[in-house]
Length: 291
Image 1: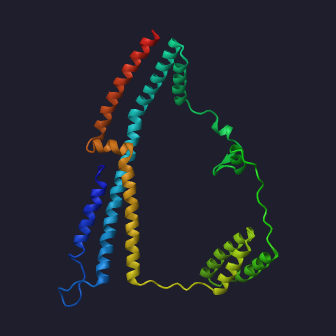
Image 2: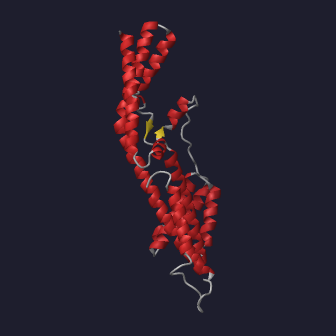
Image 3: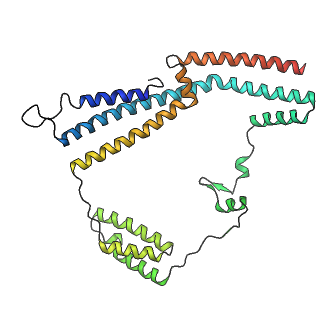
């Protein structure tokens, strides 16, 4: 599926789903010819929305693969030519600076050359300053001229200790006789431990009240509520996919695909030809400067 067709695909599918909702297979109330009951119509709407979302996901995923493939092809065919152009531009600026001995020409030449060179020894420079999660807090403080503070030490009050011990005795997971109850207790004790580690007496009191009240009895939703919840989820999922599709279509590669949806390879060949002509011009200019 080519670019610009993703949104079209979902409009067509949704329209077909809405039309199909009242066609063959639609349940009617007994007696024939009567309108479907509200819950049945809701079920039909959910089925139509589900089918539309499936088609939309397929369209978005198909286009994403097209963009990724075209991006790789773009890099393979044009990347070396772009690199050659950048190198020639830097050498031209350096040749001009050597001829003019102008500080401004030298500055431009140095900037162009620096843009082509990788930053040396980044890992060595940052050794001991960061890990996979980013800069250490001490490093951040030093770089922002903030005083390095030692980690805060929490000393729980006697009341916090009492609340913690009482909760740990009552809610310990080993007291559970069923897996579901054990999981509930483990989740609760995790929160208790975190509150005690912070020395938060008020939070421990709230947890004690929560435990005393017992587990919350959850009401089983009705069939209609479940259907409405499903429709809301489908709607949110469609909005997310719409954003993904728009980002893909608005990207540089997506925009290029939109220019030639039926033959993107020919577009690459055309761009490559233009770039090669620019390379020839730059080579001639550099040769003249060095002569």
